[in-house]
Picture 1 (spheres, one colour):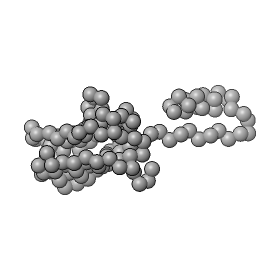
Picture 2 (cartoon, rainbow, N blue to C red):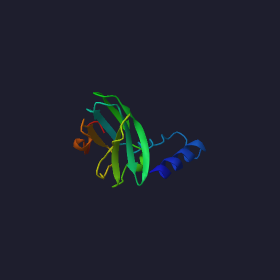
Picture 3 (cartoon, rainbow, N blue to C red):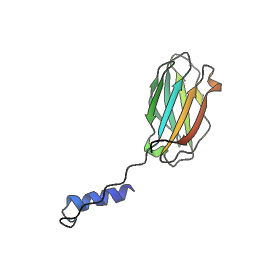
Length: 127
């Protein structure tokens, strides 16, 4: 899909696209998000673990929620794990591996007792 967009951009940019015709719109890039609700007493740093690499998505303040975009590498992978590291604590939560596809959202609820935290995957309503 990325190569198709590049080829289209080259055709249009080089003037090789037929005059007077409308170039087709480039396909939307794949997108998946993570919605995090922090019920822990501490703020948490949120990470996506994909194929052995750790991507910091951001921080969520206690009793708050936030939505982050997943790295493109995670989309289509069957080895995505979510991690939450409470700030100032040695504890950490890491989920089981999930598969994430284009248009899906991971919902992560960080519990006060980290082992009770949950991760689910569902289709995004607006995609």
